[in-house]
Image (tube, rainbow, N blue to C red; front, side, top):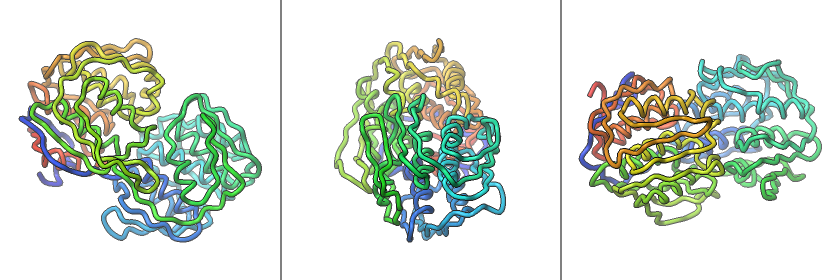
Length: 438
């Protein structure tokens, strides 16, 4: 397959006979964003290996550069960041489609005595920012009114905060902690449930004092950041598409090397195991302060499960691909507490429902619960799925097409590069029938 597969406006996936191979996926997106931002704030030069070079992360790299740090690409996934005292950028900072990049950058910038405007594409400008702006304003940051990008922030002079977040959000927690690096006084974030902890782990790697006490995270007295080397593990959200594809396509066996298995990110894997998935984890190890493993998936007869709201934070990005697995399972799968999916790159909850129905799968939404009636094997397929510019919707329904009775097409595929450059080519290398106009 050629690179054209990953930049085509339209892609289609057709029933495949079996997927086999041993591969690696691009670096974790969440960790890549944080490595660039913290590297840009630290004293000295940070070296990053395995950086995800998707468009979302490249927007963050450009933003950190515009704010005064020296950001250099040395080779595939190999970057260096020379930290600096951040300065006011010459132009508005474009975060593209990245909510993570925008929210973390707003927090980091709030601690400096600078004036900066943050914006993004049409999708990002429609997504809520109040959840981050409210605590930053309480800390003393001055911003525009409203809760959507573009937002102009005037930073510096911040004071401490004990912030009780209404939702378990790593983006909110991280924004407060990053702002708190330059705040006077105690800084604490308390969540209703623990969200992913990459920021806490990476702050420690950069020499910052961080205390985790149950659902509370506090910054200590020592908040000076010193450059370090970062190794970015494989993204479990990207690995999920390859692993689920192997589970639902007959006669498949796929191993993905070096996947992040941080327990706050493994909700999908736990759910798949409960569904009867043949998933195995080997060579567990620590890479860059994070747990990783090589994961093998083999074709499996899946059964329906009920996903509790408490598991949502550990798999918030994986519900589209879980819905695909549920469509091929036996029985009715219930996924509760999915309100957050309505304010992702699209109304992801609605997009999942419409996509499933277009492929002959019975599904419904009641409140914040998604119900999927499994087909106990291949679904009809044959659908043309509207993605609304959402990369995870596109990849999920292309995955479904590999195991359906008829091909599944998506109306847009170019944006897959925001998180998984090379997706179509990598799938094809495993034996997937995926291509433009198929």
